[in-house]
Image 1: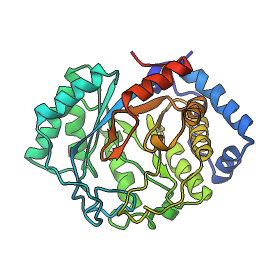
Image 2: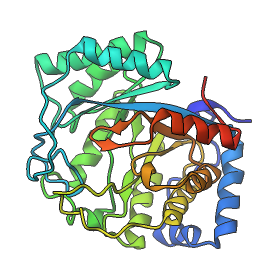
Image 3: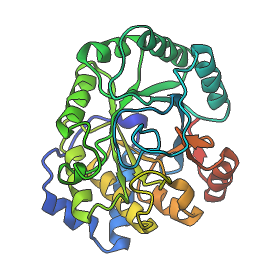
Length: 325
């Protein structure tokens, strides 16, 4: 029997995975890996449906962080124009449109290192309340949070808070110098303590080794409870960022990452996130077979391109799958 959002009683889940165990799963012969992942997926989720999510940039560009993959960093010249925080009404109009297009989760991202205090944060709280009033799940990614900010977001009705770990602790310093791994983990702890569900994943294709992918998965899968939402992103190479010339990663690596995440975190939503434009329909189908059960819809993910809704509809129709109603 499956239930949505991983709310099934968490029996037989593990939080003590070793790197060696994760490596052995990740490197299984491909048919065996996907079979195991699909078997586990069917125990906890409906294999015929995926959740549609929409991500809106509510404050764009000028971020003081130096994340090497990010076009919104103030450290790089990427052609991204800076925009102040959106008006609440404008954000809710986008949420309404997302709902009409089939999304059931609306995510709001702001290019801040730390979530601000004062009027801007109050506006975000109003956005969260408005999104929830529309009957949508509300997710935010606003940078680092204090415990009090996490509580305020929880009181406003926030469903989930996204704060990715990005990569392994060992490779992290090659990608970001302006925020420590420990600070990321601290924000996740504040979110958990406030009673908001955790959305945390990472990015592959940044020049990391497979060992770094195992390390990221260990960090995620050994959280107790597991993150309810695990977005797996493929690097979107943006001119002007330090990672613009990274070689393209093969699609099967994305499938292996998703399948391993599904095996390690059976009840979590595994989200096929950034980088889908580089994946063929066949590769995306393999990702669903491997346990991905969520996609981001809309023409953009913050500032990077994303498949248009008509392509997503055609893909799901061809696969005989559907979005959550």
